[in-house]
Length: 226
Image 1: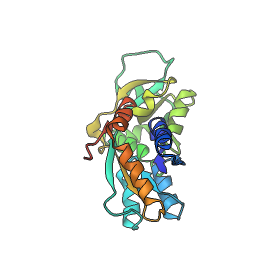
Image 2 (image 1 turned 120 degrees about the vertical axis):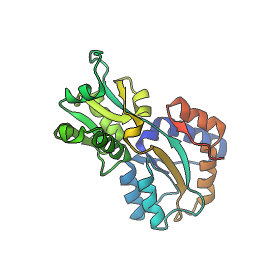
Image 3 (image 1 turned 30 degrees about the horizontal axis):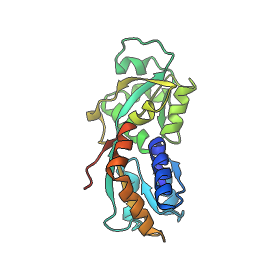
């Protein structure tokens, strides 16, 4: 299974639950959605893909690499600005927090939708040109989070779900949702898979009420796919 890095904390326990119930081993490949999509385009073996944005999934669909009628909008997310937990809690605006940060961590927009959403937000907020020289890019959103946790960056723009699952950062601001495209996680069975029935079974499992509740506990929004 190929899946966006931001799904790690919620998805791996669900995979373990599915393995126990069905005696089916699931192997995860987690990373930046653009990177994963490119790997699948180059014939990397995969059965199911969950992307952190429509773009990487659209690319696979255009190449005929999705099983027809299996694509579904599974989850939603939000963007937040985070700072190290030991930073003083000053009453600053989003603009002020970013302006005083010498290094701001993002997922690389060329590799991960989290970075694309962040770039879109900064451009729409009129901050991109001012801040671009201070940006440091990670290969995926978890790498961007790690930069802030280790204090190798003064702030980061990451998904809410990653921030909630970290003890090393504090949420300073929510990025205005109207400043960027809606964050949607599409999922689909891959047409080259020789285990499509099992992949479809796991995708259906992820849409059950108990699985939806698990995703919500980790901060995701769930889409009504029924």
